[in-house]
Structures are given as C-alpha cells and as structure tokens.
Length: 417
Image (cartoon, rainbow, N blue to C red):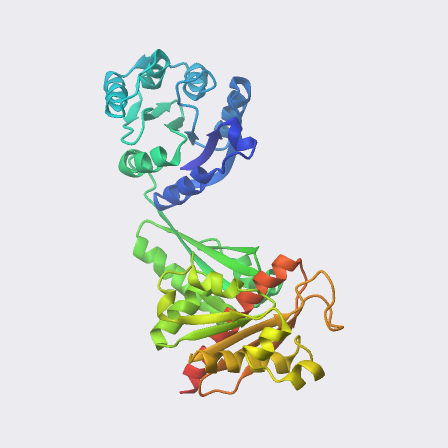
C-alpha cells in the first residue's frame, strides 16, 4: 500500500503556517505498514487540486487529504474529489447534529454555511470529529482509496488516532509493520560518516539506511519492514551493531533526544553537578541546559563572564594569564572551568571562550574556540577548535561540542574503572 499526502491550503504555500500534519501522518502510516513516498501541498484552487489528485493517482493507491473541509467558499476539497470520482455529496445527519451541538455547547450562532461541513461523499466511511465540526471520511473508488481529514492538527490528530488508524489498517492487505529507529552522531561530518559505512548502506534493502545532516549533527534513520514487529526490531538491532562497530565513538543517542538531554541524563545517573563559565556563548549553555526538565538536580548555576573584569574579579582568573595569553586561550579556559567548579562547589566546571565573529579578537581568527572541562578527580582538559560559520552557528556548535566533550570524558572515566 503506497500513499501520498496532499495538504490543501494557500496559507501553507504562503508560509503562514507549517505543515505538521504531513509529518504526523507519515509517522502513523509507517506504523500501519503503509509507505509514504510523496508529500504535496496545493492551494485553495479547484483546477490545481484536480491536477494534484491526477498526479497522485499515478503513483499511489491511497491519497490522504488534509484541509479544505471547512464552511467557506475556498474550502473545496470535498467538492473537487466528488466531481473527480463521480460521487455525490450527501448530508450526514449524525455529522449535522454534532455540528449543531458544537455551536450550542460553545454558545455561538450557527450560520447556514456551516451545514456544508456535514456534507460527505456518498458511500464513504465517516470519521467522527470529536474536537471540531467537519467529519473525516474514507472512500473507495476504483483502484484508489481517498481519505479526507480536517486541517487543524487539534482536530486531525485525535480523529486519525481514534478512528482513522483502524479504518486504514483494515484496508492494508500486506499487514507489514514499518519500524524506524534514528541513530544520532556528533563529532563527525555526514560525508565522513557515510564513507565509513557506505558498503553497509549500499548492501541494505531491508532494513534501509538513510543519512541526514543538520545543525552540526548527523543522523541515520534505520527502517525495517516485517509482519512481526519484534522481528523488525531485531533486524534494526543487527544493523545498528554493525554500524556502531565502525562509528560508535561518535554515537550519542536515539530518535528525538539531544546532546543536552543526554548530558542531563548522564549527570543524573552519576549524581554529578555542573557549573558553567561562559564568555563566548554568553549564557547559551545555561539557557539550553535549563530548558531540559529535571536540570535543577544537576545544574548549580553559572556565570556569564563576557568582560575580562568579570573573569578576573568574579572568577579569579589570574591577571598575568589575561595579560600574557589573553582571554581567548587554553590557559584562560582552564582557569575558568576549574574556578567555576570550585566557587560553586560543583563536580564539573565547563568554560567557553573564543571568537564568535564577525571580527578577530586578540589576533585570533573568527571561529577560534576553547572549551575547558574540569571534572573532580580528573585532570582538566581544554579542547581547541576552529569553527566555520556565522556568529550564531559558532555559538550553538560550541555548546553542542561542550556537551559532547563532557559525555566523552565521562564515558572514558567509566571505562577506566
């Protein structure tokens, strides 16, 4: 069963709203064993929607529409599909009563055009709308299945989960489950990672491996198909093991996790606390860390030390270090990390100092970054990097590298025991 998702609405093309429906539906359809090979977005125009339907019919046997089921003249999804497949639109009394009840419940006056939302394709399987007005529907016509869903996610998502999944599951004859797992890597580029595992990628058909780079990280999406979900998971386990034998040193987590989330989890497990001294990043590390639920159990606090006066008088960096080596130096990063941990009585101190851009500082080029990591009972480590990117990108990547370096140090410490 191959599906195409068509999102209807000019507001999507104008960038006024983001098409989150396509992502949600793709994830849900995968769990039902239904392939999604195309996403289409089309405006509120009968002729262009008709063309999109004709194109989709040539490459999918299930077409799922979101949006265009409302009461106004530009809501034309039902009308266009009805005309295209030769079906009548008929009034669904249950849907109409539900709409009338909705208006009574919300103390609003129902206008005549709202009756339009109760029109459904004849012979369709109705999907009730428990969170809005327009019902969804599933209709078979010839060799295709047409699924119509409302546009607002607050209506569409519960409708699909409650009623759509069951309706579509019964129409999928293969019964294969599609199971995906995302492996997350940091500290290696997409090209370098792909080079390490290119033979594995080329030899795979089930599971498949899809690399994706973004925001300084690389992810691999592993996808397996099998009628037995447990078998599909085992297939993914085997491929993951083979991949991590090559590039496991850069692996840090699964699916929707992040370096900050993994760092917080690791510190919690080890009952460690952390403190930050931030010059280059201006408090970004602390902001990102405290956005993670439960960070209060590991984060004691930190100091934004943008000026040399704060570095010297608050964080007690020796004047001779600033005079001889400068604020952007290994020596300064070391003292910042150690002194921050000592002053705030934390197990770990991390410091960020460098040149975000756009101009050089102390004769050092843009992108020069020093990250100090002082872990109780271990020698302080200072990592130097030369990053390439915008000011914002350099700051964001520095925070991620800081998390990555701490995780690597903690892992090495554990392996040494």
